[in-house]
Length: 202
Image (cartoon, rainbow, N blue to C red; front, top):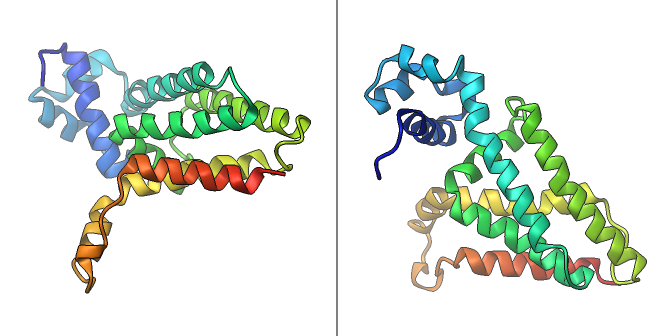
């Protein structure tokens, strides 16, 4: 790990802990131990665990909202939706800890998600709504609930991205393991994009 500031070190280890253990089971004591610092040193930078969690997850939600906005401005509604799904998937590939945290928030009803993160997520979904509305106006897409499409994208990609250990354990019990090649996550993104778009086409 390259040389970083103490605050960046805390965020790094907190991200790993939140992704592996969830918000409730993550402790500042454990994070301090991972950083080889004292718990009061964490309080110097973050007043409590909630503030630290916000510092970990909110920049990620902001980043993905910006990337999706940048990548879905041009083209037909079909191309924009394809870019929406691929951008989401590529972001999860590049940020596996965020993927795990996001999956936990979905499973827990976003009980720990800061309001700022929800605001950024609403912007992301707003972009999806715009794409779907443009597709309906162009007679390209049938009308479908935006949240259904969003959950198909998010739950499929986060679940697949975080379920590799389970898939590896299952494969140990399969008779024809040699024929059960693990698909590349990029292929999963492409397949999901094709299925969602096919289901929306008029």
